[in-house]
Structures are given as C-alpha cells and as structure tokens.
Image (cartoon, rainbow, N blue to C red; front, side, top):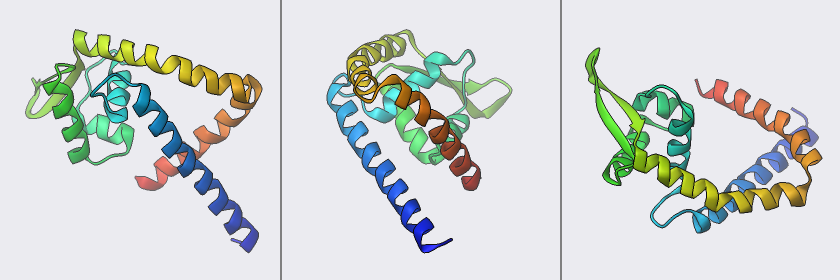
Length: 148
C-alpha cells in the first residue's frame, strides 16, 4: 500500500473509531437505567428473529467471544429479559429467546433512542445516509470475513 493509501486507511479507521465511541456514549445516556448498549443490541436482534438463537450464534453475529456473550446473556437473564434453556437435541448447548419483559424493555429503548438517531439522520441528510450505508456494509462484510 502506498503512503497515501496508508494515511487514508488510518484516517478512515480513526473516524470510525471516534464515531463508535460517540455513538456508544450518546446511546448509553438515553437507554433505560441499567441497560447497556450490548444488552440493547442482543435484545434488538432477538426481537427481530423468528427463531431462538444459541449463545454461539449470537457471539458470532456480534463478533465477540463466547465468554463475552455468555456474560451479556447472564445479565439479561437476571433482568428477566431473556429465557435460556437447554437445546433439546443436544443438552450441552443452549437456546436463547427474548422474554415478554425483554421485548418491552427493547421497545422502551427503541423509543428512547429514536429521537437521537432521527436527529442524526435529519442533520446529515437522508441522501448522505443512503450514500454511506453501502460503503459501511461493505466494510463490515470485509472485516467480518477477515475475522473468520
């Protein structure tokens, strides 16, 4: 890679990392008391899914270790937001589903963050957001493949 290419790559990743930190800070401020961004992310995925997920599937989906996902799931289970049961086909494995309380907590969180994310889209402009989404998705796909 050329020196210009390296500088461009560093600038890209710097912007992404700073944006990630800013987004997490702003989300943390508006999420319901006790809910972390990781909790919301898992609840949101489970709420949108038709099927139960295994902890391993969730860990892979979020690109985190199984241990990190287990920790998040334990906290969500303690809060009554998810149900974790043995996999009936393989008792060594588990299945995770969102509970009615978890669905309500996720809906409250979505309502809390909706004005924040709406303001971001409005301030940037819908055209800019639509233009950047394909590049961000492509980057996520590429980075996800490199991890495997």
